[in-house]
Length: 199
Image (cartoon, rainbow, N blue to C red; front, side):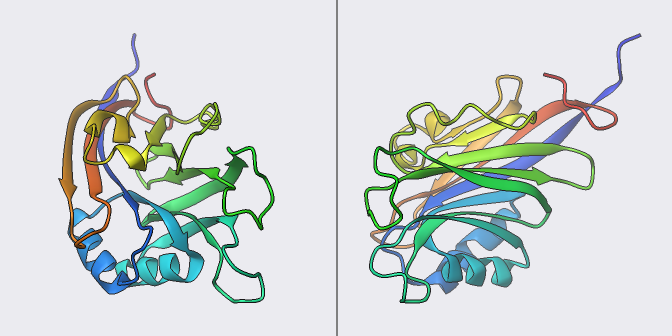
């Protein structure tokens, strides 16, 4: 007898914040989404923490590079995932030829696994720039891949869902004039009643 399955809906979002300094507006723009996970790119740790606190979320942040000097607190730039749920793992992989933290050409991909109380979980992976095959390891969970440069260009490539996902709807907004667009996508995936996805 096949296992009984149930559709579970998730909402995820991605926003490339290069050049943004109004993080109160960032938090206000994200709040109505009620997202399960939000990926932010090109963000200082303190700013990601500010947004997470305003939304009542947890935050996992990975450093990409130091744009100035390590002695200036908060000068490092990186990637962050915000969520109201549990972050069970987060790590980064260098995706650029430059690997020194002192190089502004250094790029990373962040892998962050978010687990919800209903026993569903996804690994989100996002990066800025080419990834050179670093998008492979999802840690055994369904993979949601984010390519922020595609926001406003190709919604299906900006947030790439597992092939089994259905009922996907995407919206793109530009809450901050002159900044990159914010994309949110809601989708469903069948899960066995228990702890395992049907993939």
